Length: 414
Image 1: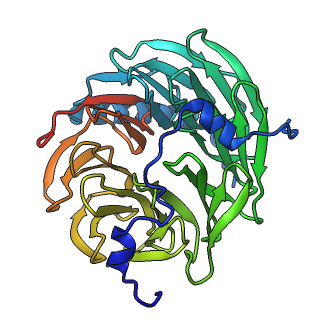
Image 2 (image 1 turned 180 degrees about the horizontal axis):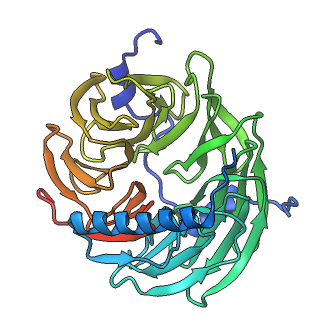
């Protein structure tokens, strides 16, 4: 720790460069990023009778589970024929959803009634990453083989595609038609859509497992499989900060969130810790230890900052939601789930936390005291991803049960 500075000072003081306040329009952002013209361009024998019996048993079991589960969903989308891995709600108006699944397809559909808007086909493998551009004009779908496709929603047509190595994540720039993706070989690609102008952020030999564009729209934070975290300048494609070694994680970085004031990121890892990092100095402000007393595998699968108070949350594979007081760096409360926490999101308007779990249930917790508030069920298998609308009124989940579900939220303290 630097002499004269305390963790509380680092967490509460703004950066010297005053980067917390910014105002950029899409044209400014594209000019700042300055995209170049780089070329981018164990086997078991099963007889037919046994297989048929197993299929009949699975169908009967599924039907029994469906009858037993209370369904709180207002809309159910069932056009996927296999597990649904990823989901994103249109950030512009919140009226559309894009989902991707193990059936090698993406779908764009109405959040209001579940009606299909268009099918995003032509993929070679499971579609594991999807997302809308900031204005809802484009939707991107990416599969495990490394094929990325961009679709123009208004014309229901593909306007761009690209192939790279296996894709780990996909994110649109929040202010411009610029798309980024991290790959298994450690590279991060950035494209201007639909022109396709691109640049790359070179890796260091291991998977770029998670990435987030900082709120200033000028920097990118990436977490790697060796536990390192890097902050990149998006204009120059240079690394400006590296957090590694004893300061970094001991193993794979699997989740990340950016603080809304542009000063911090939080990362979660398979080493069962979460770290809060100052994005300007690269200094680790806090390391939250999330170990469980239970035996078995564990990791920090989800993390997030509260917008209303100096609170942060972590969710683990063993089902523990921890709420941390950031100035004191201590746990304020622990909330135990019956199954692993896959994703968490803070409500945009109140200090409330949504958790999605492997038991197929979404739960709501009060971040101020750890009290259980509400829950929504309907899935008959694990939830794999979920998204919350910008106004906090709608939640969409996707599951191993081959469906996506829309839940209308009515919560206290809004």
